[in-house]
Image (cartoon, rainbow, N blue to C red; front, side, top):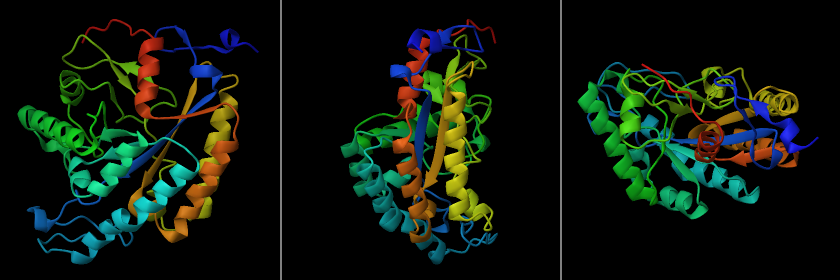
Length: 305
């Protein structure tokens, strides 16, 4: 079947489009870098970050040295393992990084830069920006941009909040020159969305929680072999749908250095990457490339907000 015949329709505005070179599925590997930017009494926060592996939360301002070291495991041990697999399989990734985490891990920032990977902003610190007023949120965004550009040599064009954002976030991101936002779980394909307070829409590159490795510490019964099967099944189903779907398919695989980087879990990522590398018709790419391709291929509808 020719590429022209296999082009799909954008459900927002009826335009036809396709992934580059006739790919049936775009796969986005998202590596979160939060370690060193989490809540910590040492950094002046009122409470420390909960312990991932144990689900323990302290409500008193006590410094948790053990939990700080649990996060640092992601930088010391997890990052080298993840980088080795990405290099071995020659796969690009989008690193959703809290800017302070990269400042405190210059070796990792250097490795990301050397690979030519994209760094998407996960905020200045890993904190809840929904508490900010507009001026505070703008400064939070600007501070993250300056920091990530200094650490990696490239300014971020994508943004991922820590779970919640404000009514102003997308407009502020537009005003600060961002290309896409990924705080959305509503689709398996990118789309244009209206922006409150702006006459221009923004590209949304949706994320996914169901295939995220954090499920393995949120639900301890969800073991690495179960995560691997779920991830592979997700890829296989979306790839098959890409053959006939009215919209091109995209898969997001969320990873965390301190989670997937453990010896008892890293093997599952290795097997998933091997599975993805053998699949035909998969475009393994960054979220920036997804957003750029979509924005160039599908003209936005004019919106009034």
